[in-house]
Image (cartoon, rainbow, N blue to C red; front, side, top):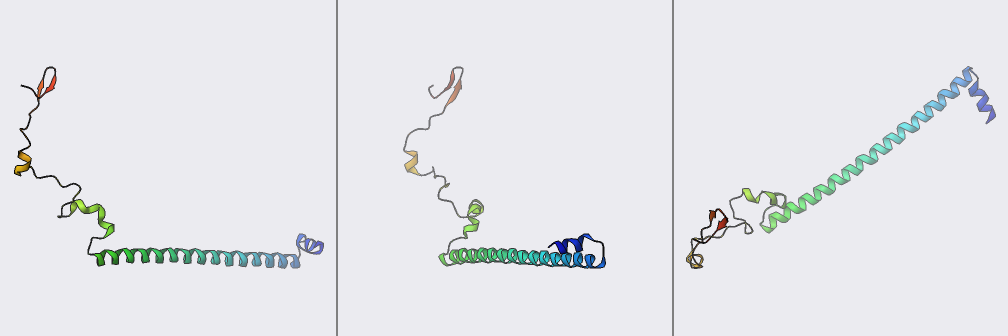
Length: 117
């Protein structure tokens, strides 16, 4: 080990060759590690993309086979022509609703709102 330290510490042709060889080896190792890690990340992202594609096709085929709408469009039901059962307003023009009693009209008085005459 002392021999290598002496060679590197001197400014001779042999010490420059040893320094260049060490530098080239370190450069080759760093480039190979960079390529390995980049390929690992590439294949990991490719796997996530494939998993997402499988989930998307499963949901798409499920919605096609069931005859329903796509679950991706569930937030746009308000823009469709079909009524939504949860927000459908009752029809007050039927006779059963009219027989419930008179409609009381509230009016503003100096003491506040009142429904009495």
